[in-house]
Image 1 (cartoon, rainbow, N blue to C red):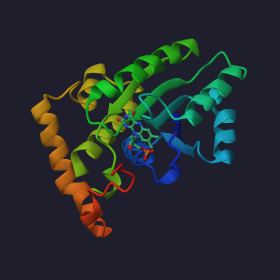
Image 2: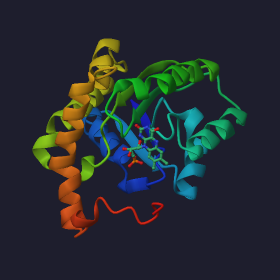
Image 3: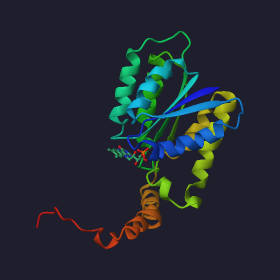
Length: 218
Ligand SMILES: Cc1cc2nc3c(=O)[nH]c(=O)nc-3n(C[C@H](O)[C@H](O)[C@H](O)COP(=O)(O)O)c2cc1C
């Protein structure tokens, strides 16, 4: 299978979206005949290449971070431009990847519904929407904290590369809980803070200033 992977993060190659996409593609490459090309929509030359290649691809994976409960403006702009281009009879299978800062699956649910409808409007089959929350900071978290999630993305890539499909139940599992109980959410946030954010602050010598409010009214 020939897969075109599009990274819709404004952070480009150093983004969390790219990090997860690369892991998916590692699994996808387990089938020796598979070929993948990755383009970063944040780069104007890649964006133009993506617009030219999209309709002629066998499958397209479009990944992006959740921005204000939706997609980054550059992704929306790309989709709008794409819809104006002539479409061939044979259209690519679409697959989406949406990852967010907040951990609960409820945040990515509305945009996932939109993406499935969008695939239909473009006349394409939607193979699924990979969704996962709590991704901010994944590139700098210790390996043991992210091993499980990366393994899942790899497995998804391997399955898609082998069958051209993804099972809705596995996708649901990847997305995780719709909502956490308030206590559980506090625990997750506390754990994340202690294990990651506080360390980042200390590493940047800003931990002591974390409660500063320089613009607060006296
Ligand atoms: C402008 C902006 C808006 C965001 N809006 C949301 C949001 O509505 N919900 C959420 O869970 N995360 C939100 N985030 C967090 C990103 O989805 C998260 O940090 C993601 O992992 C960034 O991925 P990237 O490195 O691929 O860009 C937002 C981040 C930015 C910069």
